[in-house]
Amino acid sequence: MIRTPLAGAALLLVAAPVIAQNPQEALDARYARAVAAGYKALMLCSAIAIAERNGTTRTPESVVAWELTGIQAPHNALLAELPFEIVRRPSGQIAHVAVEWAEDMPARIAAYFGPDSGCSTFPIGAPEDSGNPQAPVPAAEPQLAQQVEGVLPAGKAGDALTLTVQRALDGSAYGAGARTSAIIIQSDGTRVAEAYAPGFDASTPQRSWSVAKSIAATLVGAAVLEGETSVDEPIGINFWRAGGASDPRNAITLDHALRMATGRYSDTPGNRTDPLYFGGSTVDETALAWPLIHKPGTVFRYANNDTLLAVKAIGGWLAYYPPHEFFAKLGMMHTVAETDIRGEYVLSSQIWTTAGDLAKFGQLYLDDGKLRSGERVLPEGWVKYVTTPSGPQPLTGTFGYGAGFWLLNKEEGVPPDTFAAIGNRGQYVVIIPSRQVVIVRRGEDPPGAGFDIAGFIRDVLAALPG
Image (cartoon, rainbow, N blue to C red; front, side, top):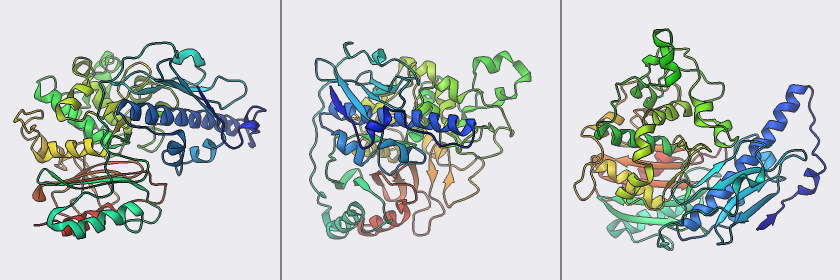
């Protein structure tokens, strides 16, 4: 058991004052504090427990310095004063992380449920024994931790490519304030450069954030290959069906969900689903009940809820063929898809994975959905499907959108067939079929300090033969 109070913890137990002009502001401030505590509990639990599952280590101090620093408002201003406790089982395995946030309420709990499930956040107010530190959790199959120092040789392009990678890693280029933790460059199926920030190695997992959306789309493709579903089929949610023709949401298809075009409303920007991610609500409670405000297929709105809906549509298939089995086929042995407290996959964001595993994921798309053994795991034509901007497109920015993947088809100096899985805080898996190149960049970028991925792509391609 590790008890780790941070600065200001003593003030917490005498009830931190809330300065608000009206009761609603006070209520919102209290809720924000509870969600921030859940954020801290989950990040500590997942980062440390899954690193240990992978055969490496993360210290609480490292997680605080990387995952818990420079995050979005309002959490960033609250985290430092919330004390946490890491509770371990007699075996030494993490049971749960508890974060105190209010004098009159239990600590927020994120509990570790095993090597294939990672950590889940309990609802606000759940008692601390919800994590049950005595309960046995299956041990993971031992994974060999790979230690990589600096930048690997890059063949004929060694000097230029090494310099490009080093400049990204040390922060001297590609965005002031950007914080890079890992980079892998793969060319023609061969890893030509690989580098990590201090404290990270080839087995260190980081949260995927919205890179998970592209992985979710890939799992949908695997279900399509097995004949379990079709992207043109309506998504059958039971309480939508009960409304029959009177519920227009019955017209929403998997294609609409993958293209962020369901037409549904949500009360926050599309990439914020804090009640589910850190508040302890469930996928069903958070993602399914929103009403339509546009005809399906007519308006692009980037939304976690659309990806969660797509995953819900293949939930029955995932119950028999869970993500870890698919990851194992790809050799992604250091990747964990986490769930809500009821076991529903949170595949809009909540995957923990390594740079090396993401390079394997990108290679699958260069190989047209086939494994190196020749086994097909995605349908023929799936790569074309996810990279075709046939749905409504973003109204701002220079990136287009396919089905679960971003399209870098308008970036000067970047091959127009380039597509990418992109996530919060600077997660990138860039796939360039015309050059047979995969670029993985992991980071923990603070708000307002984005990584210049287009510039990095241009410099990497210029340093590679061809």
